[in-house]
Image (cartoon, rainbow, N blue to C red; front, top):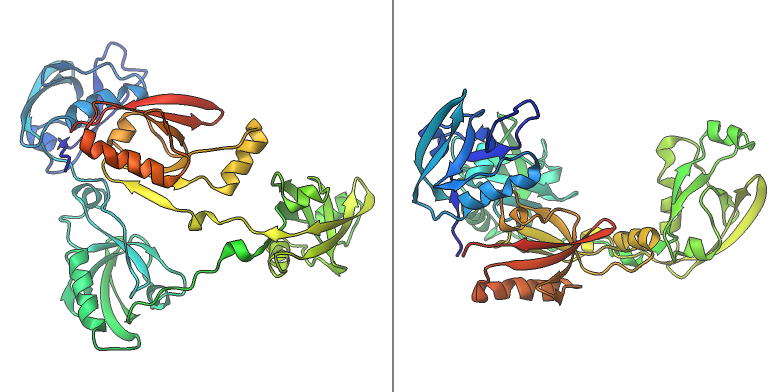
Amino acid sequence: HVTRGWIGVEIQPLLRSMAGKKGALVSTVWKDSPAAKAGIQPGDFITRYEGHTVPDCHAAEDLPVFNALVLGTAPDTEVTLEGQRDGKPMTWKLTTVNRDATQAKESELREWGITTRDFTRMSALEMYRENEDGVIVDTVRTGGPSSASKPPLRGGDVIVSADGKSVHSRADLDAITAAFVKDIDEPEPMLVEFERDGLEYATVVKVGPAKDPVKPKLAEKAWMGIATQVLTDDLATAYGIPGKKGVRVTGMSPDSPAKKAGLEEGDILLKLDGRVINARRPEDSEVFPELILAYPVDATVELSGMRDGEEKTWSVALAPRPIDDSELREYDDDLFEFTVRQVSTRQREKAKERFGEDLVGVSVLKVEPSGWAALGGLAADDIILTIDGERTEEIEPLKQKLQSFRETKPRSVVFQIRRGPRTHFLEIEPQW
């Protein structure tokens, strides 16, 4: 288990008007934190940390040096900070505490149709909580018990009581739920109390034995590979076909059925298999996609429409829809504190179109602020290509490589990433 120091301060780059100022500008001091107890205030300047000079922070790229100094300090260590306030030198002495994760891990509660998180010190502070009691609702499954309650639960709600019992943590909620469903076969109503935007609410959730939700397999739906906009009355008139209904092609995926059939951006589609595409209002944007989804994946459809004022027809052999982003495998690394997902079909297509090459690697979904990955410069939407020279084209090799560092404890780890059209090397330096 890796422990990291925390003092309850957040810093930002110096403002342009702060000519001659040194170090880092304190932007936030968290309530009841070591920094708050030591008297540090927003607007102070920190120039030294335990004898180390804090570089002048003129840009966001300069901030990780200070954050790394704090995180690399063991909890329960007395440290001295030096700086300025109103032009006068200041010294602060404080004792570091253990840094919790910004957010606790998300976990599913299938009996309720929700995912939840416990509070951490940071998430409690950010939600203005006096303590870490309660359970945060993270997501609510559409059509599940919690979404059907009145009022329905929603993301960001805090469950504080269930079945007449106080809920201090996810462990409490699990125990209450297990006892409730123990001797029932079908869902039964449970009184639930929760907080939302500082107000207290009550609702009734029909909680029953966990059942696996049926997920539609999107890959088994038909796919044409185009994006469209509705042919409104104004557009139809402007294109010289007043009164016509249909859609206009605004984009298409490389190697898609539409591309292979000869469709182009700007084509106007009026009929599908001889039937008028009944779309003429902006809110009809889903009409054409839903018509395509209704076909078998191996169907061939006939489109008729216009190109540059001339009538055109196209025969399109549909294909199975690529895997949806929600079905892609993810991995959350709690040591380096970032989450990755397999590169999606959409990302591959975009890279192929923009850069003319296949995209390999795994995509960064999120990076926890002040974690080791963030301090090393990793950011959301980066594509990780290699770690210490080893290719990471799939989730499993990346996971194994990161897990191996728990044993080897290297002083630094080098990530090769793609960020837009460029590739970069990042050096991440964990403190073991």
